[in-house]
Image (tube, rainbow, N blue to C red):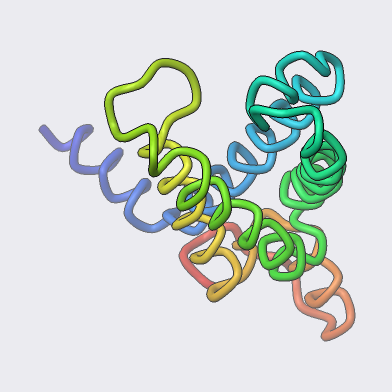
Length: 150
């Protein structure tokens, strides 16, 4: 039982690490979504529902590609998240909302989850495993800490 308690305590004192890992996963998911849209134009046209919106989905693909990469690194995290938020608001309210909750593929609940995570990272920043944090710590002369400090 002591071992379990020690393991649980370690995770509780390192939750800043978990926050950063979620950011990395979110960035990776956006990056992969962009890669899919860029590599298969048919998917983009299918999502848009028309060839006329293809340019918009091309923009979204590029924004997700760059924004996802920046989120993975934790570099200008708030800006990267902020630039993704309007795209996800559009996805939630103009694409997936009319489809409802019971669909296959990328759905309303996944888009809402990504939107909420982006808002959280915009408001609270990148976490401890981020280029932003290391740059700030280096400027102030501090040593980066992976514990629950922000």
